[in-house]
Length: 250
Image (tube, rainbow, N blue to C red; front, top):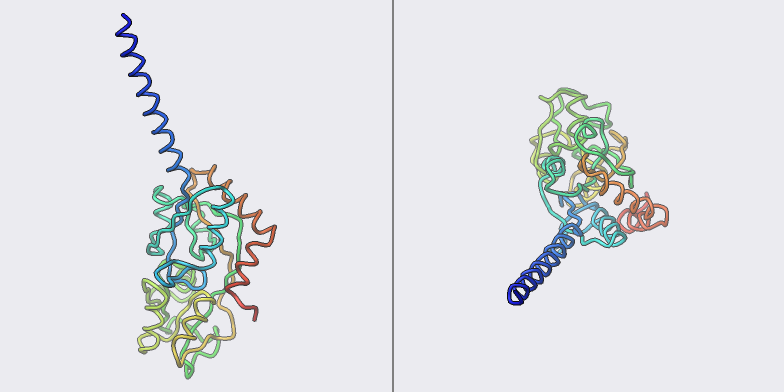
């Protein structure tokens, strides 16, 4: 009988250790904050020296630090971010993403942390002098699934719009004369114009919008925690300091 008790104690001890290890592993897993982004959108997210950096990266890291979580960044195609968040592949999406009614049907959004402007890039000798000169006959380049793409297709028709996987490809199509203009967020627009001689940004903005973090509609607990941390970082000036670090006031 004593032998049986010893065996039972050993089994229970092993089970307890296994359970503790499993719990520890589970906690480690759930303590990771996975952020999906598309690192072709300077200064919000881009590659530098083999590392993804930018405004969104620093804000996400500040949120993770405040929550005591480990930040994991996954670089993926922009149009796969929302489906990935919906399917639970990523905890959140942060990629200079604008809040729209269409996107709100699929995901929830945090408080807005930055303002975005959709701008138009043209060649310096272009006949397009203002946004009013764009029409359904204009060959417009956009990044697929972005608000620039959505707005352009709504305003000028799908046939007028050429979709590219990223902004750089759209700009190269403009440089080579395949399209007449590119509609894209103002900050990457400035970077692309600086890198490509003979291009300029129109003085008139195409649209203004709000950037926010997207979440799975069923993960309200995480959404509330991240949003609370974000609002604290906005209130204490951390977000503004990060924005000011990357964006020079005009």
